[in-house]
Image (cartoon, rainbow, N blue to C red; front, top):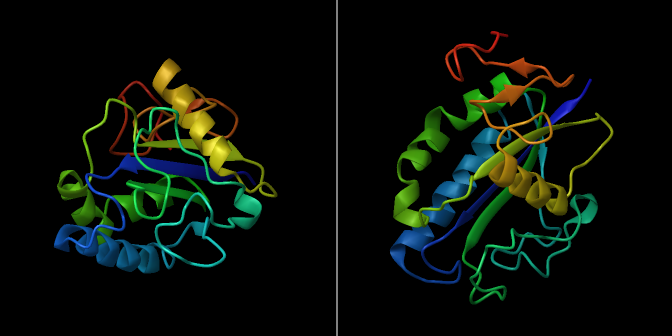
Length: 185
């Protein structure tokens, strides 16, 4: 059974190393969200640096998730002191579990405050795609899919909740979101 890959990317208003209260608040809520999402039905795994060190994305060992990569339009720093981004890469059993985890509870509260921490972007902040159950997506896969989504819109290769696709490439819709013309699953 295929798994759903999810890549998220956002540019923070200040570097991860910034000792300001807002940065600390972002870290604190982020750690709580990871704990909660990790217990959510349908969640399978997410990329974690082997050393667990915050702020060292580019030098970290990500194991099977590959070398850390960011979109070409990211123009801030790449050192521990200057990195100003938040990125995730995760695997799910399907769209409904991912939607429920993202748009409820603590993560929903954080989404409501995203502009406290993140710059507004002209690029999509997340992308989905299907992978075989034996595949672990890489950071480069996520960047490539996000770029494709930005350049071409939703397609079976790279899509959003609102314009989603089933593993066989047919348009699908989660009840309650997406275009009304899509079929409901």
